Length: 376
Image (cartoon, rainbow, N blue to C red; front, side, top):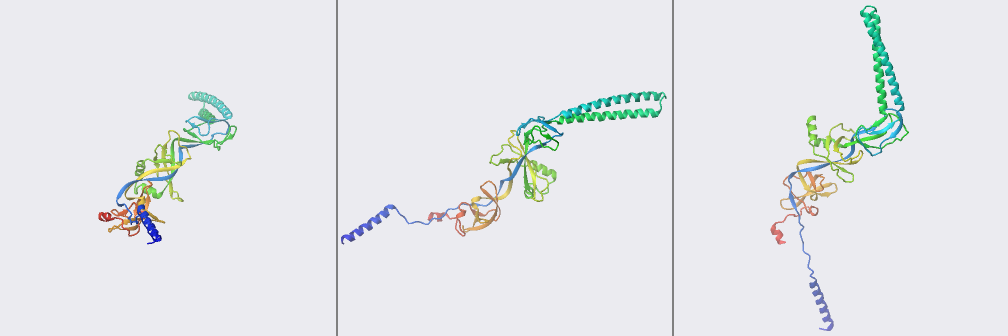
């Protein structure tokens, strides 16, 4: 063997040795592992969610009862006020003069009544003595009654003038929050002028729309009106979630689930009442009402067991020979982010693939005996 051939054998030996030292093995075929479950019916609580808008229990539009110049604005926008607190003051000078004039007219009417009474009583005594005729007696009696009526009218005019004077000071009819104030001191106002909106916020209503289908699901068919009211009273508490995801700490109660259905939208307006002791809720804020309702005797499967193919949903059902076959199903979201309710396509006792469902192919074997596993 010459020197050149010797070098070739040495190089070949080195290559084989280096491959062996690197531990390179030929790849082996491996089987995917799957998990399965037996389908059964169970009970689950579903959160119904509705877009809602808050409104005060007593949202009052504040307008004057009399016309005049606005002299004082005693509150600011967003201020919390108590019932009876002064909000606005209108020029009361004309109203005061009208009251004084009405009081003077009342005094004149009282004097006229007193004179008519004296004349009537005098004619009555004279008639008994047969000095005057019944005609004069009747005339004096009628004059007395007319004077009494004039007093009543004058007294009513005084009361009306006193009320109008009181209207010049506008007070809060309910406790709540002052809304926007579009007027300024010095403006001429009238009963057509909106001064502000007072939102009675001790209790707030979350108003939302409910479709007829949901109402039919919640309110059982054949219920009488009294039964419906009792049923609504026993509905679970509701939660209000604000737009930023914050959950309002106080729970609400459904106060209305019935009404006139909107012919255009096919829905009706419902209300949930929330206490507002800290005043954190305001009229006009938007959020989501969440109400839990129990579904009984339904098939619930993990979301990862359902495979989406375009607009279809399917699960892989395990047959007797341990192979998987695709079954189309219809599902409803539970709202918990983990499960689906299967409304068709499966029945109780079926075995389906859960973990690994996305890796299954039609006819693939997904269950193996202990001997098969040991033999791998």
